[in-house]
Amino acid sequence: MKQIVITITPDGTSTVDAQGFKGKGCADASEQIEIALGGVGTKKKVKKPEYFAPAGSSTNKNKLTF
Image (tube, rainbow, N blue to C red):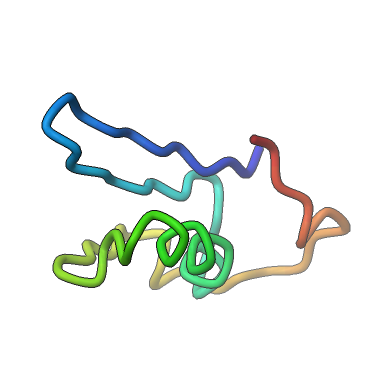
């Protein structure tokens, strides 16, 4: 299942974690959320191994669960 987990700590630090995505889809899916949160991840983006995997075909390619 594809989902985006947003964590906001008491000091205001935010992280966005795209889960269940392969390839560049995670960056595409989380981009607008990062912008809305004031540029989360623009200072430090960590690419998980899934980012480097082929995206593959899926009928639910653009479906996200929040």
